[in-house]
Image (cartoon, rainbow, N blue to C red; front, side):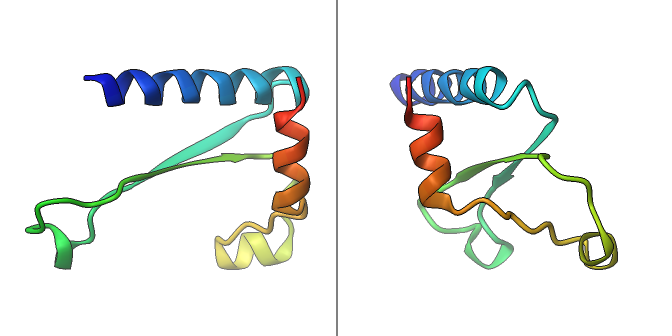
Length: 83
C-alpha cells in the first residue's frame, strides 16, 4: 500500500507541474506492463509514461504514429523541477 501512496504523490506533483508550467496541456499516459514472454516472472518493473501534447502532429507523426519530442530531456527535467 505504501508504494501506491508514493506513486500517487509523484503523479499528483508531476501533473500539477504540467498544469501550472505548461498551461494545462492535453496529455496521454501509458502504463507499460509485463510483455507476454515475461508474464510468468515473479516480478516486472512497470513504467508509467506521461506524454504531454505540446505540438501539432505533422507528416512523420501522422504517417508513423510515432511522436517526436523536440524538448531535450535534461531541459525538461530542469524546467519541471523549478518551483
